[in-house]
Amino acid sequence: MRFEDRLPLTPAILTKLAPAVERPGIHLGVWHDGDELYVWGATRYIPSLGFVLEDIEPGLLVIKHRRIDGFGKFANVAILKGEQIKFVDEQGTSLPDCPDLLKSLLAFTSPARWHDSVNVLVQLAASMRAHGHGGTLLVVPGGTSQWRESIVHPLIYSVAPSSSKLAKLIRKGSNPETEGEWQASLSNAVDTVAGLTAVDGATVVSDDYEVLAFGAKIKRASGAEQVEQMVLTEPVVGNGAVVVPPVQHGGTRHLSAAQFIHDQRDSLALVASQDGRFTVFAWSPCEEMVHAHRVDVLLM
Image 1 (spheres, helix red, strand yellow):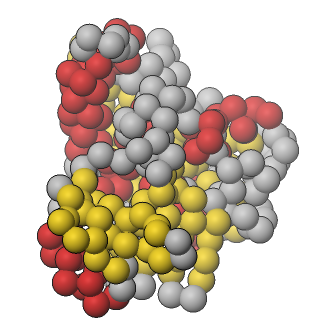
Image 2 (tube, rainbow, N blue to C red; image 1 turned 30 degrees about the vertical axis):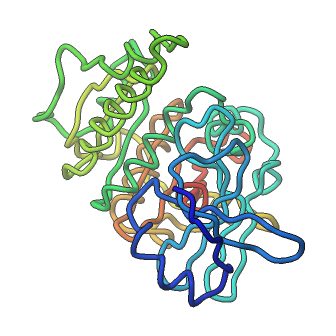
């Protein structure tokens, strides 16, 4: 929708127009003329690499851009909260130099390396954060039941046979003729799995995204030591790794996820808090401890 007469980009104009673009997917279009910026209309289409400035809440702005293929979570560039500015670390310099850990966190270490078609972990994380109930998603190796050693039994919400809609869509992939339909089906499947994490307890999926269980209660595996400390990082320029007790980073959800990764070292744990924080837990063989990577700056 193009305005007959462009409007100057001023706080007063934005305040007037804001109610019309509150719903997701609707954006005011802004372009320059000389040194001045003007609002030319509203759109649902964002050009590739076009900047988006989103007002998340009072005092919180996020600068992001549309990914090349236009599907999935926009890539965040910077977060402005009050007087604080955080620039996303696209080079992964905030992470320790540990190849096996970087491989585990590849989906989250850098938006620049997100797969052009779809990154399912990132989409699941964004959907988990969006439902606002908090939750835990455990990603375990397929074809093994070792993860059950860290789960309280009986497992009430076990899925048998495993739910495979999301896995089948990923394996099928898209083609130019059916890409729109495939993307819609994939988004629906992602939201369905993410919705399961709102149930009290953890949702368990295999590394090829077969849903194995939900509402699972995590426990310390038999004979395993209690996790006492972990490495904490955030993908922000200038951030450095710090070693902290798990209880210092979050509540029961974070502590149980850290314990699960301490015991099941070939797994990943994605934890969403009700306040919007989001942390990915993985095992760092270089540090020989659990690594917690706080990624909510990527998901806003």
